[in-house]
Image 1: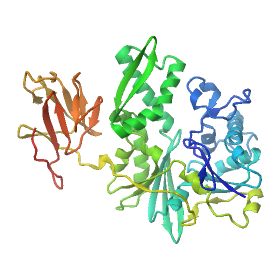
Image 2 (image 1 turned 90 degrees about the horizontal axis):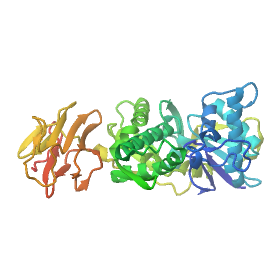
Image 3 (image 1 turned 120 degrees about the vertical axis):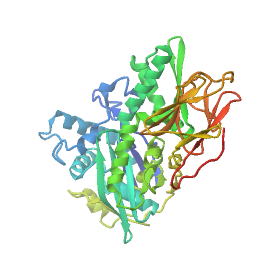
Image 4 (image 1 turned 180 degrees about the vertical axis):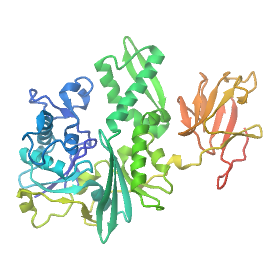
Length: 474
């Protein structure tokens, strides 16, 4: 007998057997037209923008929202509930059942958005798909136990239509879920839609090409989003290029532009974490590598005082579920009317290749308070903009005429709610720590801006109690 683990996360659906992943981690976006029997329940992210009316991404969320009577789908629950149940059954048959051999057992790691009522629907769908479930396990507690973390850990997560945070406490050899916060203000789909609109606006401004005007180009742009967002988070900017008639249209967007569009999500995450953490205790956070790749997430979470970030593989929960020890009564549980939901997981009972990565976020650096220019420290006042160039506003930094590669209004330094940002206005470019910025970038004490070629340099410093200062000049 083998144990198959299912990570029932609509944004990161994954399956594993005996600690080994079975396929890639993918969103739960599937074909939902019952008339198309060959594709019903199969992955459909490549068609979600071309044929949205034939695709489902809300079937698991429908159960979590309390759509109907637990365990009794199709009984006076409405057309929407019956449709969600039918799609869920089809997805389980297509994506899970092929990995379950006779005699195997299925363990399901459930996210906090699926409450006990929702799990009745999930169990009914599994039995409809002939899947032998012998236990539900809290996904956050399972992750903490699998990695052997100690003390109090908060596990933030992002679903397709929501964000969540779970507080897990480790004690007496067990990791147990203690509290949960769920926000339905924003999810991954909300962020992706804002990214699409941001990129489309940039392309329209550049070439009047609107990629959202036609379904095929919208789908091509949607397919590029994950890689582009991850690259922007990692490298500071990303270039996206699409066919535009006989030519093509390319735009480069900065990490801060992606992060600004994702702000509803990152704010919801930070608020949920802040509400769960113990007063005065620096929070320990455990989140997936996929979540870390969303621009703005690390910056938002690093703003929490004393935060310690740990990362886990995207499929860790599925692998951990498949490595739980087999109970003596597992076979009886698998056929019982009720299947247990375990919110406590024994620490150290899971042996695998789980790893912990300490994150040293860039956002933890001190925000600048002044700009050093020709021996003077020019303050960066909250709510104001400081212009830099050959002809800035009267209170700006005026650079000499005749400097190569310097525009009349070259860039501005803006001190807003997101911190201090540099916004580039010049065709010649503005360079931050030796790298040309793409549109805008967030600044920190110790950064250096170069303007022109060979150019002049501005140094960013922090002056105040406990702040380190940089005495260099441009």
